Image 1 (cartoon, helix red, strand yellow):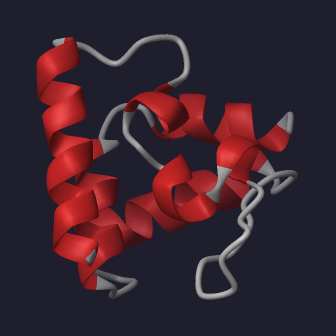
Image 2: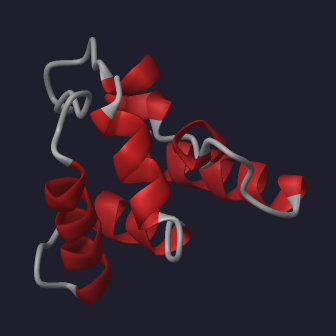
Length: 93
């Protein structure tokens, strides 16, 4: 299931050509973390209302491997360069 979500998210990004104003939705983050970052799946944390600096750090830690999770490592890689926009969006939710 995780591989399917990852492939779907990557396909979305590639078909869009570039990430638009809301990279959270464009990258498919809502598939696990819910619309607006409010997860309805207990396995995946809600991200809405998080402080932006915290979210940026977590994404960068997944990218660098300092924080380990196969799915999030791949998804955070897709978010490279969009960390602050994602964090700002989630902080405002």
